Image (cartoon, rainbow, N blue to C red):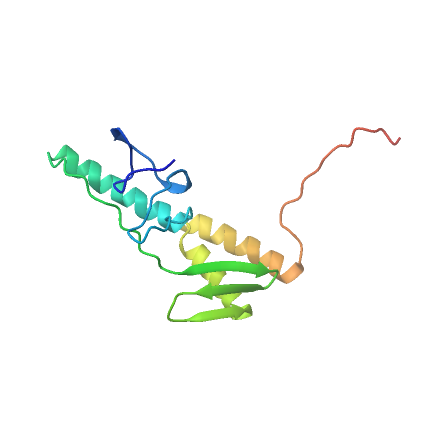
Length: 140
């Protein structure tokens, strides 16, 4: 949904839209990407706006997206990183991608579980979870 610069629905200033559901234009006319870092920034913006409104300040505040860089996996042990000031590809970028994703998980237990699961996959090449499915035909 195309939202106003303050992340509200046009005609409904009491309704906010964030994340990949919010299509908001930057000052340069480009769209804010529908990725987690942008959604987190939008969430903080909406929380600050609601807090200001509860304090009596009804002035709309435009959302300002800060692009911190791009991280993407390319394959089993390769990634690409572009922070503007540094660009990396390959195995080192893949390790940094993994560390960044673990860092942003909430809670020690989640970080530990994901780290151990990824370490298992890295060392053995096997996924730590398997699905058991039953076919339609009976082969007995």
